[in-house]
Length: 219
Image 1 (cartoon, helix red, strand yellow):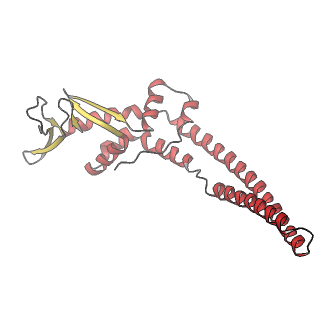
Image 2: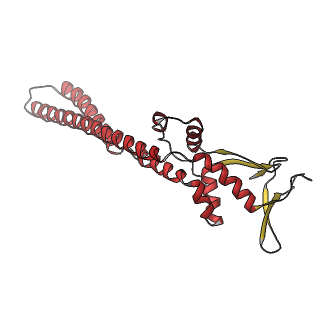
């Protein structure tokens, strides 16, 4: 977190052996920003995270939508993989017949070499496409749900976390935090910015379905 006046870092300092205050490091010189209690900062962060609170029905609806979408994508992949496997088998049978024809002298070397190169290339392409399908990442649905579960109760969870976990939570959710004149300014990291925007504008289910982005982890 930085000072909103001069851009220097806000640093913690213990007062009277038990109270923690934050203040500008004044690395660039004198700064008018006053000291602020850690509890005050935490309350401001908690208020900010309250912007991520959304209706409980959203999670159930999005979970069903993502489940249905993942099932449909899985069916499509299986159908495509079946077609590719059939094509790869067909090409292999052609290669086997071609080899027999060459051994029996029914075709010349030039024709054999040309067709072998073509069909092997086509078959290799089918096998590569099958590998891509097998390695397809459909974890975006789990990621989206995990994101929603994380932020659904972020406002309440934050207050219960120990200091180290609070810092990790803030670092995951927020960026560009600054403090000036008793006000906290911060940006939500992607995709939490989309969630906050949906909450503020009262977005419908269609907007929530778009939550399929990874979290920018910077812990």
